[in-house]
Image 1 (cartoon, rainbow, N blue to C red):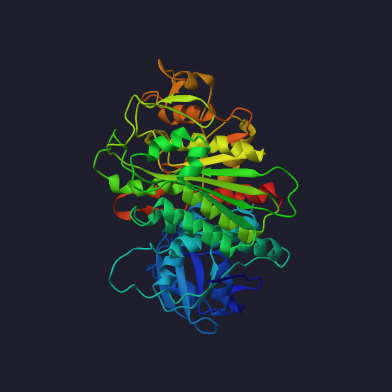
Image 2 (spheres, helix red, strand yellow):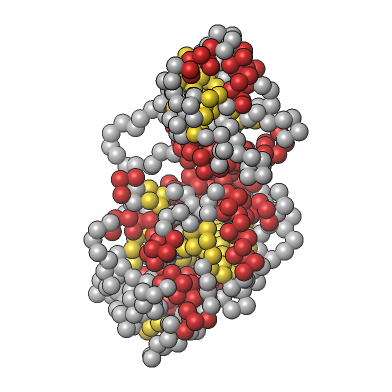
Length: 496
């Protein structure tokens, strides 16, 4: 798929199809009025018939009107004139989905944009690519039947931008492509079933990334190596499974980097039964998505490498299964973390924090400037925030604010939850340094408080993506979040 910016008036753009916004009551958007003048008002006369009222997300494909270069016009409803970013994204996604059902090979999209203070030229172009690629994404299913044909659509032009704005727009396109590629990799990995996407498979995909990108290198710690690192919490989780665990270390090194590395840590439970604290059967199939944090790390490392960002970044992925067996950990067991702290395991279904705490301790050897972990950690975060926001907790409010602001700019929103010492006190244990759970109250935060015990001296943030990384039910599948947020966060950090 090719993406371009156009700066000329819509009537002069060469494309199979032009895409224009129509507002409530069939009123032409500003960009469409020049097109209507070129065809002698034929478009306005058509809309006066009332066949297309301009409701948000509705589409209608028309044959070309006289004197136009394009052979088709796609009308897209944008609702009222006060276009919000959310409504613009909905209209854009609807337009791309409609184009994908046609034989159109190229399109010029000129929907009404939100005000520039809400969507500047760079963000407009980057978001347009991200929305387009998300709308065109097809789940990598394993069905035996013939796959549907790929859409004929090969090129999309976005605009119009002024000539002076086109430079920012082109930069936005490039960053949007890299972000979308990272999101696709994350989605492809997370959508695979647990019998395919095992810890070994994830390690192989990480090695493939390093083969693809010269700036990346990969090291995989096997079980013996993990034991040598004294990662007792990680080993406790994996001991009930026949699948060998892996600890993946993927590094991006830039000759232009001038500061200590940033470390991403991703939870890689490739299937989570809950262990001895077995989950309810309903929707347990969705626990294949419990490695979404790991998939996000691989996805964002791909994005970083494609953009050749001038920074050093390390991705750490502890990955294993959480299975019940005669060898599995039991409620009441006490294990020793790599940091030397002992943990009483009261619930074996609170396993993500156990593998992450050893990975966070491992991150210390890089003397990182910042550490960010991502995990589908708690159902409690879904109860607290629903599926619209990722949860953010941090021991540094400035870092948390940076992530939240990136989410606003990227339309991949996050919300900061408190992380004060009271929550850590709920983890008290009679028999160990602390327990791995603290009851239902504030469950997402006490999970973050558990991880915080391993981050003293680190500038650290935790992102709970349990509600945002995937959707369940009939539309089941990975969303690719929070790749857009992380891309924006990194781009702003590098001043690019």
